Amino acid sequence: MANLYLTEQGSVLRKTGDRLIVQKDDETLLDVQCSKIDAVLIFGNVQFTTQAVHELFEHGIEMAILSRTGKLIGQITSPSTKNIELRIEQFKKYQDVAFKLNLSKAIVNGKITNCLDLMKTFSNNHPDIDLAEEMAGIEVSLKNIYSTDSVSSLRGFEGVAAKTYFGGFGKMILGGFTFVGRKKHPSTDPINALLSFGYTLIFNEISSLLDGLGFDPYLGYFHEAEYGRASLACDIQEEFRAVVDRFTLYLVNNRMLSGADFYKNPKDESMYLKREAMKKYFVEYEKNMNREFKHPETGENTTLRKCFRIQAEKLAGFIKGGAEYTPFRLD
Image: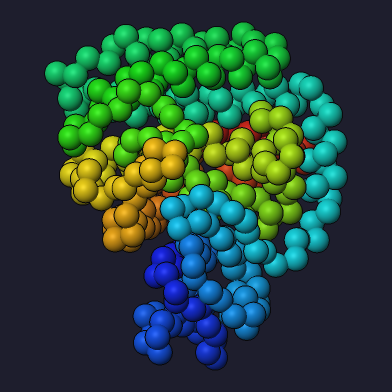
């Protein structure tokens, strides 16, 4: 199972039988069975028929609409699950201060630990690059999260850890690019553009998954409720940010992308992948998301995409009074 990425401008997604086809100027660009698709992501000027949407709904397949450059515009989903009991418990737990703090600590612990592990692995493989100061700073932040007594102060420690981490991230870039710090709105250099793009993709997958399992994706615990933001998806996303970071390092340090693969928007200096480079990105992204490895807790074969569901199901169990929530750990 994989995501379907539609980037050919002017093409149309149609249904024929139990299959989806993508056509442009009477030429069929793609023909695939719905049973082989996890989600459909549409970029820019790509049209789709209502029959195609009906087929997606029949198979429980989510559709995401993005700008040509990869900014998430919205999602088209089938009617929400009937799991109202989970949503009731989710809202109840939102009022439980201790629950919010404990869950938020687990999420932040997962995020910071994964960032630290990524940095340690890189340092072991590249002993000539000194990351000792950054790793020591991150470890201090990691210890501080256990002593905090509020989610707001926890956000402060998480912010300090992130700043320290990205201060050292530039040292890990070996593929001819430079990185001087995290810049989001807009992303004005290739590395920030890759990070933002990757975060958008996993956010979309997590948000759709949470909705399908019966959560309200807009009510989070670590991230405050904010109009129009799927805060619960933001919560779970934190644990997986290092996955995108590692993937970005893989692409640039193996010189799979170069400066020629990006273009700059003259209006705001924002940087984006060119269309052909984006296609290359998707191929490698799918390989990364579907690569099998042993789950650190169960010992069973899993994939990163399956881990999204595992974490969501853990959260559902914790909300309903089950086992303590344990965060995702980078393999």
